[in-house]
Image: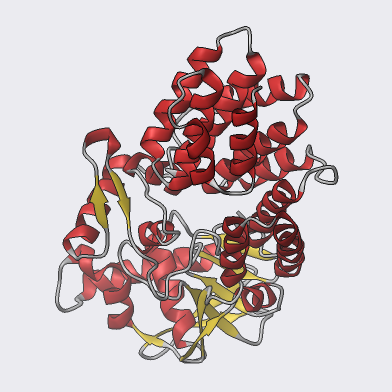
Amino acid sequence: MDSLITAAARALAVGDPLGALKRVALREDAPALALRGIAMAQLGDLGRAKTLLRRAARAFGSKEAMARARCIVAEAEIALVSRDLGGSAKALDAARATLEEHGDRGNAAHARHLEVRRLLLLGRIDEAERALAALDPSPLPPALRTAHELVVAGIEIRRLRTKAARAALGRAEIAARAARIPALAAEVESALLVLSTPAARLTVRGEERLLLLDEVEELLASRVFIVDACRHAVRDGSEGVSLATRPVLFAIARALGEAWPGDVPRDALIARAFGAAFGARHADESHRARLRVEVGRLRTMLRGLADVNATKRGFALAPLRAHEVAVLARPVEEEHAAVLAFLADGESWSSSALALALGTSQRTVQRALESLAAAGKVQSFGHGRARRWMTPPVAGFTTILLLPAPLPID
């Protein structure tokens, strides 16, 4: 490797892409193409970066397996940043294995971190945790240790283990200072803000207040009977019932939870649970009969946790063990809040990537994006398969780091 390539690589390692380009911008050999691609990625021109890295991988050929593997890892990072989550992870895994075989532990660890970050974005937390457990961070340089601790913090936050998350972010902060890379320090600072951002809205006895993530963790560990509108579940301590596939039952449970210790009139429950489906302005006897059926189903689902008692004017929730009822919801609720929560990370997303992350169809996501765009809440750029959606951070919306993990009851 000649002196200009070495100098460009060192510039990139300390976060100086312009310094790297000054040395290799006019060169077309494989190492220079790879370094130019990484520099363009650091400058934010991801399309140009991807093209340069693919050219570099072809130029290296099969005889330079380690160099090609490094290009594949760099391209995988670009895919992650541009939220291109639909591709196969096999190429990245093969590149990581090649790097380990050739003794390039640092880039192999970077590939592992990219794999874990992709799994986290897709909500596959168990897989992410297993993949990260295979990596020993102790011999890594400061920049990679920072990345490692950020991934650890991401897993801990999704598990609602805020003490462990703070410890990981503290270690990331120390490593970022040692690395002396401003972009890394900014990423750690941004991650720390998550822990001081409202993560949920709590309703108890008709009064509402916002909760931080550690307060949510404390609430879920308490003996309070919780109607969880973040995951559409009901729980009492370690026991609970998921109502994610029973929207009518959950709507009734939430209305009863918000009114506790009082009751909810029958007409109000009808309007809350399925008034829109009936399309009627006034409840009649058929609506009340349907409500009795649904309340009976809810009693069956909540057996052992709570009862639903009939009152003169409606129904009331009666926990069997807990002495308090709370309703936990997102800080801001609207029709397409889940889509906005993902876009609030400030990155550009394709509709297909959002569909993968949300576990729904691409057409459903496209309709949501079109509705949000019409309301001026999101914007798009590009056309066809290259179209991406993004929005500036939305006040009051938590990011995907908050409350995405399934409850132990799920």
